[in-house]
Image 1: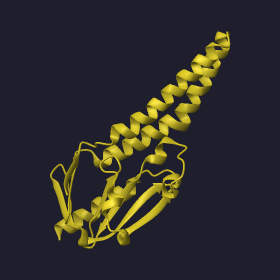
Image 2: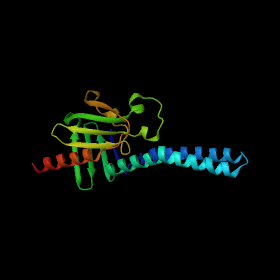
Image 3: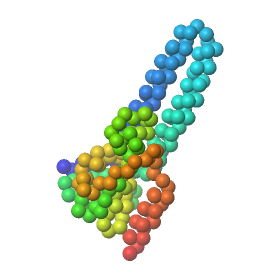
Image 4: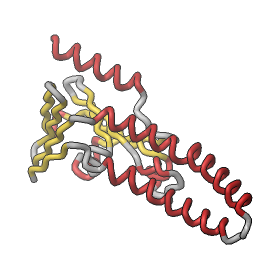
Length: 184
C-alpha cells in the first residue's frame, strides 16, 4: 500500500453532488409551478424555494466547503504501510502509525450514527491527528475520506458535531503548537 492524495480529490464530489440535487429539485418545482397555469404563482413559489434553499442548504454548504478547502489546499498526503506524510507548501510532516497518540474524528450527528443525512454538510467530516511528540494535524474529507479505515481503532475517538466546521482557534492553536515544537 503506497498511495498519494493531492489536489483535494473529493472536493468536487461532495460539492457538486449537492448542487446537482438542488438544481434537479429546483427544476422540478419550477415545472410543477408552470403547470398551474398562473405565472405569478410560479414566480412566487420559485422565489420562496430559492430563498429557502439558499439559506438552509447552499450558503452553509459553501461555507463548510471553503472552510475545508482552505485547510487542506496545496496539501499532499502519502500513505504507506508504516505511516503517513503530509506536505503543505514548504512544510513536511512524516510520522509512523506508532507515533499517533489519538485521532479525533469530527462528524455530523447523522454521519456519526450512520443515519440518513438531511443536509448536504452532513457528509463532511475532518480528523485531528495528535502525535505523541506534540504535533497536531487536520485532515479533511476533501483530501482523504477513508482515514478511519487505516488508523488503528484503539487510537480513534469519534465526536458528534451539529455543523462540523474547523474552528479558526483550533487551526491557530495547532499552527502555534507546531511552530513551537519546530523551534525547540
